[in-house]
Amino acid sequence: MWLPFRQQIAETVLGPELRHYSESIKGLENQRLVSEATIAQLRQEVIDKAKTDYLWIGGEDTATQFDRATLGRIIAHCRALALKNPLVQRSLDVMALYCFGQGVSIEAESEGDKESLERLIDDPRNRAELFGPEGLEYGERELNSTGNLFYLLYGRRNGPGVPQVRSAPVEEFTEIVTNPADRKDIWLYLREIPVKDGTPRKVYHPDVMHKPANRQPTRDGIEILWDIPVAHYGIGGFSHWAWGLPKLYAAGDWATAYKAFLEDLATVIKSLSRYAHKLTVKGSPGQVTKAAVALRSSHVGGIDSNDTNPPPAAGSAFVQSEQANMEVFKASGMHVDGDSGRRLMLMFAAGMGLPETFFADLSNSNLATAKALDRPTELLFLMRQTLWKRILADIAGWGVAEQRRAGSVTDPNAQLPVIKVDFPPILEHDVAKTVTAMISALTLDGKKIAKLFHGAEREGARLLLQALGVDDSQQILDDIEAAGGFETDDTPEPQPPMPGQPPQAQPDDAQEARIIQAFQRIREGIEKQERS
Image (cartoon, rainbow, N blue to C red):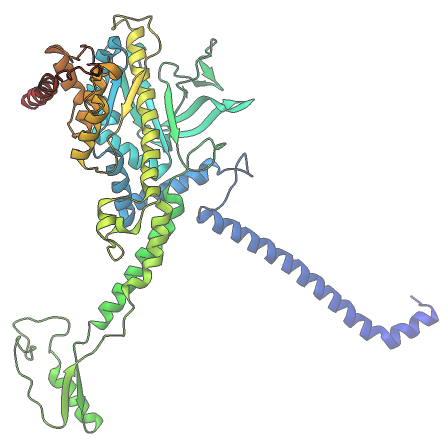
C-alpha cells in the first residue's frame, strides 16, 4: 500500500521514536491497571482485617450497628477470654461479688401474691437459673461476656406446677423482628435450637411484652411458640441497637496485650537464668575450651547415675588458680521491669470500669482505699444492681401473674403484681452507727414512733435487719407478726408544764421497755430462723 509522501517521510524519520512512545504509553496503561487492582486488593485486605479484629460495622443497617455474624465472632472471642484470661476472670468475679455477694431481697407488695412469689423463687430449677446465687452469678457473667441475656418463660399453658424460667445462650438467637414503624417495639425472636446430628430447628418466640390480639401460628413457614415468651436484656452498644454488646469488647484486647507482655517478660527471665556463673580463664583459646569441657556434664540436659562428670553438690568449694576466676553471673539490669506493662493493665481496668487495686496492684493503695470505694466504681455497681432489680422484678412479676391466671391465688382480679427488689448497701458501713441513726430516725430521739411512722413498724424492722446483715429477713418479720406483731405506743405525748406547775414525769422507763421488747422479738425471730 502506498502512503502519502508526507506520511512516508514521517514514518521514515519519526517511526522508531513514535513506536517507542506508543509502547511507553501502553506500559503506563498496564501499570495503571495493575495499580488499581493493587489498591482494590489492599482495600479488601483492610476490610478483611477489620472484620477479623471485630472493628467492622456492616449488615442490613450498615451505618449504625454490627451485623449478626460479626457480633457472633465478637461474642465467641469474649467468651474465650472469660474462660482463659486471669484478668478477665478477676473482673467478672469482682462485678458478681459486688452485685450479689451480700444477697438480694425479693418481696411482693400484695399479701395475696406472697405465697405465689415464694413458690416461684424457691423452686430449685428457678433458683439455679435466676433467683439463686448460682443463677445470679451466671447471669452477671453472661451479661458481661456476651452483652445479652435471654430467658425462656414457661407459663401455665406448658403444664401444671410452678412457672419455669430457663436461660438460653445468645448464640441460639439469630434475628430480632420488630415493628416496622417502631424499632423499640420488639415482636419476635428467631431461635435456632441445636439438634444432634441434624439441622437446627428454627422457631420464633414472642417477646414477653408482645401480646397481639391476632396470633398467627407461623411466620414465613416457621412455627411461633406463643406459649413460651422470651425476656431479653442487653448492655453495651447504643440505644437503637437490637442486640447488646459485651463489656469485654473494649477491654479484651488490652487483657491480651498484657498477657503477651508478661509472656515476653517470662521468656527474657528464663533466658537469663540459663547462666548462674561466669568463669574467666587467662591463656589461649585451647585453655578456655579445656576449662569449659571440665565443667561440662557428660549428659547434657539432665543428671543421672551414669553421669561421669556431675555438677558439684550444694555447698561445694570452687578451687582455682590465678589463671581462672569464677564469679556469679550478674543479670541485674538486663531484664525488663515487670511494672513497665502497668499501662496495659490500666487500659484493661478502664475498659471494665474497675480500679487497678482490684487486680492485686497495691502500690497505690492505703487504709482509705481499703475501707472505701471510689465514687464512679460504686455508681457502676449501683447501676448494674438497678438493672438486675428490673430483671428480677419483671420475671418474678410474670411468674406471679401466671399463677393468678392459673387460679392458684385467692385474688385473681387484683392489680398487676408489684414486686420489690432490694440489695444491701454496696459499701460496708459502721453497723453500730447505722443502727443508732435508724433508731434515732424512727423514734425521733425520744418522740413516739406512732406520731410519725405509725403503720411502718414492719418496714423499720426490715431496714434494721438489713443493716445488721441478717439473711432471710422476710421470714423473720413474718414470724414476729405471727407472734403478736409490731406494737406501737399510742399514748399521747406529754405536754410541757404550765408556768408555775411542776414538770410531769416522763415515761422513759416504759418507752425503753418497749424498745427492749421489740429487740427481743427481733432476736427471737432470728434465733427461730437459725434453728430451722
